[in-house]
Amino acid sequence: MAIERTLSIIKPDAVAKNVIGEIESRFEKAGLKIVEMQMKQLSDEEAQGFYAEHKERPFFGDLVSFMTSGPVVVQVLEGENAIMANRDLMGATNPQEAAEGTIRRDFAESIDANAVHGSDSAASAEREIAYFFGK
Ligand code: IDP
Image (tube, rainbow, N blue to C red; front, side):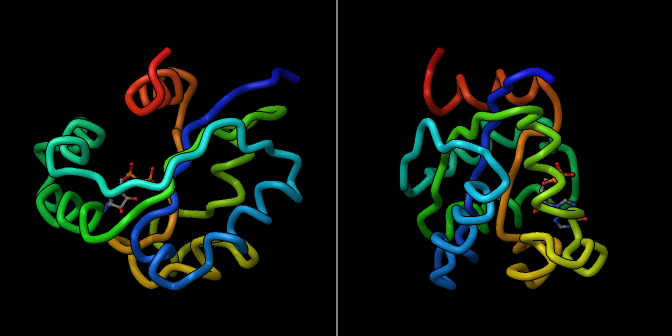
């Protein structure tokens, strides 16, 4: 299996709930290494650029407001099959549909405040890592 890197974000709701450590622990226990990490407040421009693919969606304004509502942890996870491994740990976008034991099921409230982001493909991972951390 390939060693991959993926972009992960701990979103403002999870930071506000004080569960950064619990979420990181899930990544570490699953064998994913945190190889870059930064806590930051996203600007409107950064959040809009990051989610540019959703710009025409009806929820885009709410998504940008939410992502800029407080600090986030932006990080790069590395490990075997990291992109899909992280998506499996996260669970479905809507926490109500997320499997038991997933991060979203355990820590998220709603589809808009859903605790974590994770790249969904190799192409997204490359773009998203470069977006925050450069090459
Ligand atoms: P993902 O985060 O599971 O990859 P995407 O479809 O890429 O899901 O959507 C990006 C983010 O946009 C989601 O994590 C969620 O916060 C928000 N979002 C997606 N669909 C909806 C919706 O129908 N209503 C409100 N927010 C949504």
